[in-house]
Length: 172
Image (cartoon, rainbow, N blue to C red; front, side, top):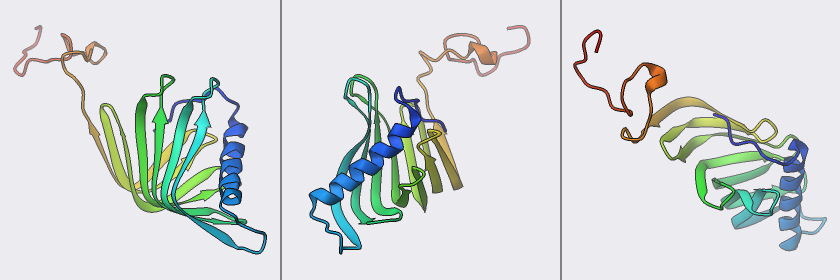
């Protein structure tokens, strides 16, 4: 599954995420002697459009943020917004690790993705922000739905505006 492309250069997204997490740690009073900071109800804009509107927002119930190494989080939710600010899709993960070096999110836990017309669930995933790609690994289930009155399936040989007669014979 490919996520929508960003208008910003690719390398800035990873840097932005690291900067936001580091700023969050600093804002909550982490000093140099602490090995990690635990944050609850974390909410961070992860990516923005050129006009400043939020494109991707990251939320976590609990995040364990060490001075170095991956950030571990639970109850993670990524919300993807269109240019008008309308919620387009949601990716949620029961728990995961965010690698600040390469901008990837890895998880062996339950994963769910939803947007209009599609719902995908499974166990285990990798999200690569550089490639804007998500891979689900195990027990993947995809549910597609569409409005038959507005969906044009002509490219697939189905006549009409998305509806098909059950007992069509040859030449109809």
